[in-house]
Image (cartoon, rainbow, N blue to C red; front, side, top):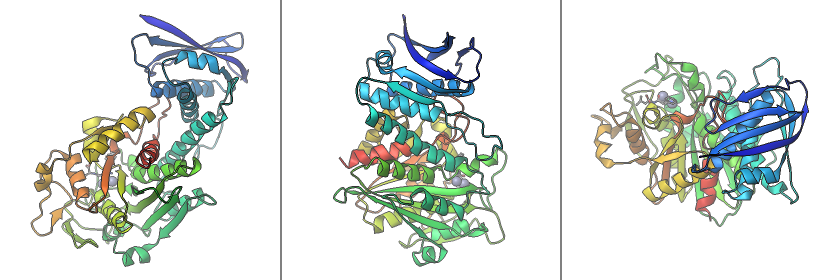
Length: 461
Ligand code: BES
Ligand code: ZN
Ligand code: ZN
């Protein structure tokens, strides 16, 4: 049984467009078609009656519509709140409005920094309503803007986003905000014995950086540390990557970008949380000074690691972040990283994997189901711990078996989790990039921003 819902855009400022364009959005999960009728754009959404519609469907649809308008150079659309609410009558009205605005702004995102002709219109959305919906609209806008901050950072070309420029960009982003930024330079990193960061960055022409962001919306709330992997480019180092498209590896700072976006979202929405972001910034390069396979890294805690493979660098630098979270006495720690190809193989490109405290992983899954940053709980089984055995150090940074790669990476991280803290690890390697669909474009997804921000709010309730 198919029910037809029509969302009518009441009026459009149509600059140049073919009046008779009829577009079917092939990639859309819900079938959605656009028809221009006498200067009015009518969107027809086909919804199966027995289908369960989610807030993410609202976002995806809004994203499809705003991109279609952008492609047709339509600068403005006016939509009646009533039509929108009727179309998604089973969902909460307020959340539908926020989700629609969020999807709208995400859908028309374009990374234009390197295009010499910046000709895209950002279709403006006006929702006509008899009630005051300003706060709902603003929330949708803030969420999308924070995700787009992360997308901008991830999409940036690797000659312009380096361990030197990344901290500067972060400082600029939080200038004159409630977020305090501290950048540790190489000397300070040495003094703090962040030896994973120093080892991984040795082949880079840039100095490494460690960035701490603090936001105290409510200092009485439990301290949450968000730890992000910020590898501005991952060549693999001496264990050089080969084969596939290496230029994707400019996005190996996706975890750091998620953390930055989440801090932006939390601060801008004045969330009552007590949060600190810890970001390790390095470039993993082959060079005559590079970290060598076989080297041993001694961490501040005394733990020693045999470097079995310099391409498993993410866990080496995250270890320093986890140790730091312990020094700061964080009660909750969430780290996020483009950590393993194995998670991509296991879960594909539409959901990340989350490891750690079982109850918390399921709580996080629920949050992701609602906000669009999907995660699936993964088993953190100790039986695989023996795979990390080393002959001459405490353990190795790679598994000695070619299986369960995402789990062994998580088990490595677990060794550095300070006792007493509740910890989650999100592996987002599979979801860092998207193909055009819904509110996603052919570029970085900005995954994790909403997940980390909403999760932090959740545990601070
Ligand atoms: N940054 C990569 C993981 C990755 C792969 C991210 C694909 C995004 C897309 C990570 O540093 C890495 O190279 N991991 C290795 C680990 C291996 C050497 C144990 C991997 O997954 O192959
Ligand atoms: Zn790597
Ligand atoms: Zn990496």
